[in-house]
Structures are given as structure tokens and as C-alpha cells.
Image 1: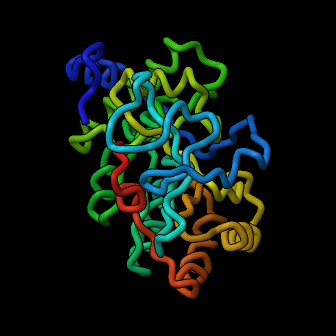
Image 2 (image 1 turned 90 degrees about the vertical axis):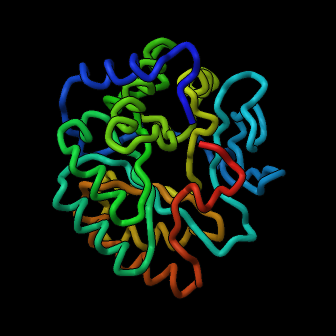
Length: 267
């Protein structure tokens, strides 16, 4: 995937290099959606788009030029995607990745650009374990409150950092909201993304409810094709991972990357 014609690779790299350095430990959305946003089944690839999506997911970009939001994969698969907000203490992050690898699973880390700037070695570590690095915007701002230009800037700067460290802009997930608005999807499309990755299982581990609660919420909500939203940098999430992975194994569900979960869907 390459950036749109409006935004050259040189421009993206320049923005990424100029961005300020910071580190975020949590992901409080501040905005929620009702249960009606969950479980809406799409067609074609079997992936489930959000009700806010302007088009069904597929291999071609939408006619509007916007990205398309996908909440989950096909219900006929035996796989799920463990996805993580990438920020916070890198010792916890490294330990969590090791837990997933011990269970022969892989994950997708949607990294905040400032976190990657602070800890560029984490991009290499994530890739070395067979995981994917995605774009969770540059500064993790509440995107529903941003102007279209600000949204574009946040996505483009994050894409620049991810590309600089991995050679690809990766997959995209918006910050500060479980679902992308049409304006966010349009901004993502301008940067070059075809897909915005949401989720259908959210244990709210960023609120630190305790490992047992995180485990119970994940296993209560997960089903074939689920995309699970979790967070690096939280001790409770790390403590919950062995039981989550055991629970998935008992259900014969395999932890894969979003690229594997969504065949035929382009980043």
C-alpha cells in the first residue's frame, strides 16, 4: 500500500521526524457506542463492517475514496485477532509478547507514533515475533473531536513513523473512539488506507479492572472471527494473557494477525 497522491512518502517521513516524543500508557476512549453497533454481518469476504461504513469491505477501495471499517472476520473461521494499543511500559510489552509466542499465537500492535519514536526498537521486536505493527495515530488524540485536517495529520504522521521503522504503513485503527466516523474514514483514505480496524470484543482492560475480569470479559464475548481490543502497558492485561490464551485453545481458536483474519481485505 502506498500513500495517496496528495501525500508523498517524503512528506510523510518529514512529518514523522518532526513529531514530538511522548509515551501513552492507556487508551480511554471517552466515547462509547451502543450494542446496536455490534454483530452486524457483512457480505463478500465474510468480514463484518461497522454500520457507519460507507461500503462493504473488499479488495478494491471504496468509490468514495474513504477507508472502510471492519469489526470482525468471518464467523466460519477458527481464528481470532488479538489486537493491542501500542504504548506504555516496554518491559510489560515485551513480557506480553512472550506470553503470546509461548502459546504459538501472534498479534497486531496498533502503535502510537510517539511511543514508537521513543522506543523504536519495539517495532523490530514486534516483527521478530511474527506480529504486525499498525498505525494508532501519532499522538492518540480523541479523533471524533478533530477537524478533518487534524485527523489527516494524525493518521499521516503515524503512518510515517510506522513506515520508517517497518517499511510499510501497516493497518490502521483510529484513536479515542471504538468506531471511525465518515470524516475519519475519509482522512484515512486520503493517507492511503483502505481499511479501518475496529473490534467486537472490548474488555476495557485500559481501566485496570483486574486480570480475572479481563479474562472473563474476553472469553464471554469472543467467538470465531472476533477482533479483540487489548492494551500494552497494563499489568492486569499481562496477568490475564495466559488464561485468555488457554481459553482460546480450549475452544480451538487460533490467535492470528488481522491480515490473516481478513483475507481479501486490504490494509
